[in-house]
Length: 123
Image (tube, rainbow, N blue to C red; front, side):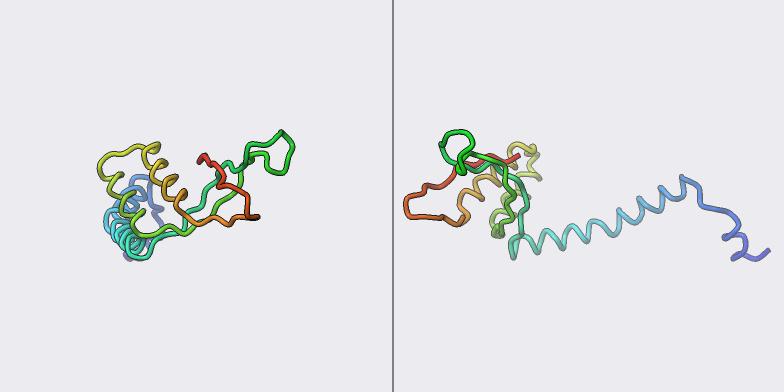
């Protein structure tokens, strides 16, 4: 039996599959992450989340706070701040504070001249 036939006959074990996966991640994944990080820091990124929006209103009103999806472009400065915080060991709550502050500066559409900016809380 030649080398090709022996390779086909013996399926890879779990240890071999795990070793291959670790080798791929060790070599490939850091490059992908570095490229993504550089791009986010240079160009910004699109942030997808849910937040509670609403105004002080009676329950059942159309202004009653409710969870809504937000898809918002955030500039590269926010990405740099997030990566710096993560590298410094910041937890999820600290990173959420950075994102909430960035969303607070994002231009949300206002309907009507007398409406104030809604309060929000990330989930």
